[in-house]
Image (cartoon, rainbow, N blue to C red; front, side, top):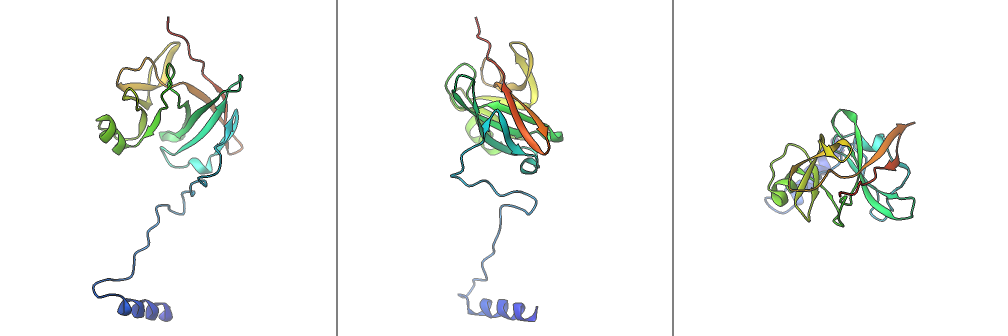
Length: 180
């Protein structure tokens, strides 16, 4: 311990005047997993898309791809909601081609002019905001993702998820009902 203190004192004394040792900060605590490598492909569903261990923090997210029966691939997002619930959605707006985004509180304020206490889903094309903590009207009843700003037709399409043996598994995507 005395050697460490002496080295710190020596390094401080040899640094430029007015400058101390650099402070190292990590954006991740020991409890939070490090993000996956940027070059790793996202998981493909149906199938396992994440582990419970990766999704411990409220509002944690993980992108994945949902492969439809016709072979089309849809970008999707898993979100850990408060109280330990998981929700997955298609990131393609139901009746258009815009890609939805996970919007932080800061992004909601700056890009959507909306004050919020927690993150939500945004549509950058129409500036519609969906609140995953609330239910809104869907074509077949109530659907998670109430529209809190903007003029979308319905909330994002849901993807069913279940937890089994510590894995979060996406099984099927909600079908968009065409508006007539």
